[in-house]
Amino acid sequence: MKLLPAFFLCILTTFAAEGPKQSIEKLDPALDALLDSGAKIETLATGFTWAEGPVWYKGRIVFSDVPNNTAYQWIEGDAMASIFLKPSGTDEASANQGSNGLSVDAQGNMLLCQHGTRRVARLGGDGKFQVLAAKNQDGARFNSPNDLCVAKDGSVFFTDPPYGVPKGEKTETPYHGVYKLSTDGKVSLVTKEVQWPNGIALSNDQKTLYLAVSDGANPRVMACALDGSGLRDVFLAQPLKKTGRPGGCDGMKVDERGNLWTTGPGGVLILSPEGKHLGSILFHQPTANLAWGEDGKTLFVTSNRDVFVLRTLVKGQGF
Image 1 (tube, rainbow, N blue to C red):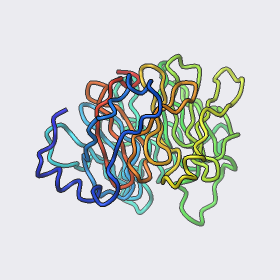
Image 2: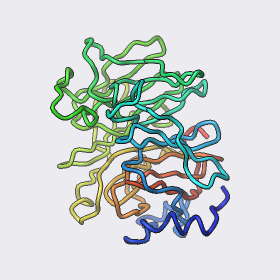
Image 3: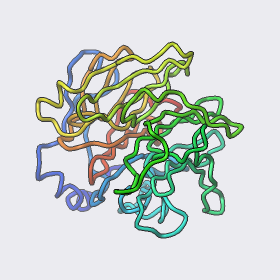
C-alpha cells in the first residue's frame, strides 16, 4: 500500500488530531507475531456520518455510510473516497438507512445487509440488487440484517438486531436472531438467545460462529457451536467500558491463525481464539468494523466518521 500524499493526509487527519492520537496497546507478548506495536495508523478518509461494514472487493475497499444510504469506495491511487452505491440499502433513493455489513461470496459477488429494505441482497452485474432473503423461517420480515459472513460451503450467516427499524415502526420478529442462509435459499434460525447480536465471523475450521454482542449493559464476544452444543462467552468487554473507553462490541473478523479482531471499547480488540486479550488498536472513539484487503495484511477500520488503515503482520482469514 502506497502512502497518501502528505498534503492530503494533513487535510484528512484534521478531525482525528483533535482527540488523543491513535496508538497500539500491547497487553501480551503474543501480539508481537500479529501486529507491530509501532505500526503507523493513517486516516484514509473522513467526514462520514457512521462508516461501517468494510469489505475488500475487486481491488478496492468498499464501506457503508449507513445513515446516508450510501456505500463508498477507495482505490489505490485515489485522492479521496468516492461513491460506489447510492442508494445502498433501498432500491430507490430514500430517507431510509442504507447498507450495513458487506461481504463477498465465492463467485466474487458483493453481498449486503440492507437496513432500508430489511433484507440480505446480492449486487448484480447490472448494478441492481438481487434479494437473497427478506423473511425468516416463519415467514416474518427481518428486523434489519446487520452483518454477515460467508462460509466455505457458500452458506451465509447473518445477524438481525433491530437497529435499522425506523422509529415508531413495529417489527414482525419478536427476537434478535442469528440466521443461516443456505445455498438453496433456505433460511434457518441458528439462535434467538442473544440480545443485540451484531458482528459475526466463522472460525477457520468452520465449526464455531463468533458473535460480537452490542448489548450496552453487557458488551461481549460469544461463540456459538454449529454442532448445536450451545453458546458460551469468549470475552467480556464491560470492564473496559467502565474505564471510560467509548464504543462497544460491533464488527469482527478472524485472522489466518484463528485470532479474533473485534471492535470494542476504545477501538479494535485483538483476542486469542480462547478469548485472551492480547492488545488493542486504540482510536479513542466508537469503532464500527474492520476488514483486511490488498495482500491480506492491510487492515481497514471504520470508526465513527473516519476510515483508518494500517499494516498487520498476519493475514486476514481467506487471503
